[in-house]
Image 1: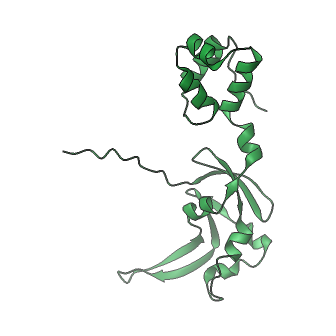
Image 2: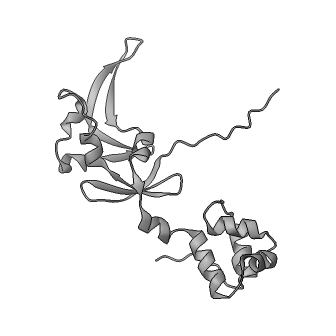
Image 3: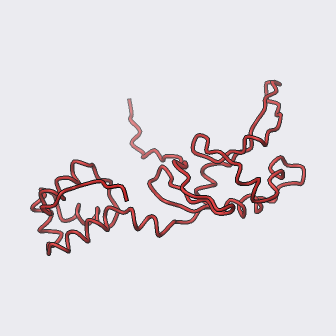
Length: 178
């Protein structure tokens, strides 16, 4: 039996809506990224026919009546009867494809910067006067790994972070409510 070792890509989905001002949606995706979606511009830019059910979204107030359903935006009050290939009729709710939402979004630079562990680790390492190599030696890892963490190119297990902070930096690791 041959095992497929290709990496399986995760479909980007919205985990949480942080803020919505009637046009722009600030959210966090399951990729760990904070992103901004200009929903009003996106829907208006779809250039849908006048009789399309999404054309019911005419203004910002109607646009704000969305719900987060299974990682995407859905407007439960906009429904249309559709006929399945089997001939069965069902009601469908207007929603947007989560991949399209992700691809049409932009990075929320402020939130991403604020929530990057790598930048915090680099700042803490420099504040105690250690090089990446010195920190790596103290924490029992490699300079390359410390560099990857600081540049946000590596996932990090909590126990590894704890070892780097508490043993390598001789500080206490705490998660605080800002």
